[in-house]
Length: 342
Ligand code: F6P
Image (cartoon, rainbow, N blue to C red; front, side, top):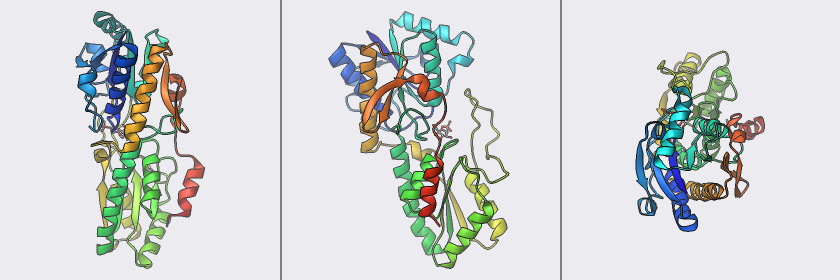
């Protein structure tokens, strides 16, 4: 059997772990051959390939990014896109696809499965917002980078008696902000799931300053003030209909300065730093186990499924379950962080 592998959407640490594990187990255990499709769905759409075998993947585990490249190409939006993928697969003798990606990439995989193409998924996203799996690899690394940054920002904030605003990724789901805020003992954590009350945030900041501490505020890029909207670049929507977010930290700073005009503040946008570099051990292991499970699913003909973490086990679940709706932060998790903030 010949398997085409692709990584789509925003990259994240741990992608190479999946590719490596799938190829190592697929070749040694099942006698599979692999072909790498370059740059997400653009690869099978345009026939862009790269060699993929055990020698290529053996040493890629600690590498950030993806050796296959990525893109936000959406073949479903391209005229005849699905048929072009089918014919690329036929031309290259590719029997099945392993699609590694988030909601968008796996949404396409779900559609291809419905169209009769053999596909198995592996979920990735630093945002941790995919349903049907407890955690996605990339998330742990992103949170660790953000917490390290917050620890550093807290010390310089304390020296200068400043309010430090830290903006993290998370456009629809505030998991990164929530876990960062909790682990970095932020005074305020703002997520997209709950509009924030700028008066209440300013009151907390004033109290923290009053007791001689430097306020640390963690804000998701998708956080929204009550009655306001997300801040974005105004650039065109991407092929999956997403706006390019920008400015949530600055929006929060402006709101604070309107209420506390003398407040010394600094805004740090962590942005793509959270997606770069080597994966944590947790993400290497989760990525590896996802790759092993996905390749077993292909061997067993369990198509239309994705490798999901359920508790401590990685199991295959229907792709449609993962892509139906986003996994957002639940109210009880917001209640938890409220107890340890302020
Ligand atoms: O992959 C998810 C994500 O990291 C979001 O958190 C973020 O809004 C988006 O990707 C950024 O995308 P891009 O890399 O296209 O700027």
